Image (cartoon, rainbow, N blue to C red):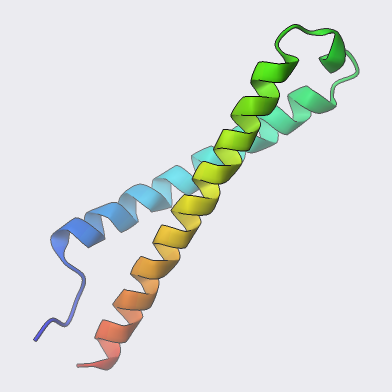
Length: 80
């Protein structure tokens, strides 16, 4: 009977723990860049906005995966 997450799941949870703060920091930096007064004058505005959208989607997916792993971890701990 399984009582803890598999090695693969534990490793992925650790990766997600490190990834989510990096994505949040990147999102904050991109938002600040887009909020700058000269952001619209920059030719990089569209690329920055596109990367922001992708980073937000990546963070959302990482958070969902992390939550799923944590719920599994919790369910397994109650089976003991």
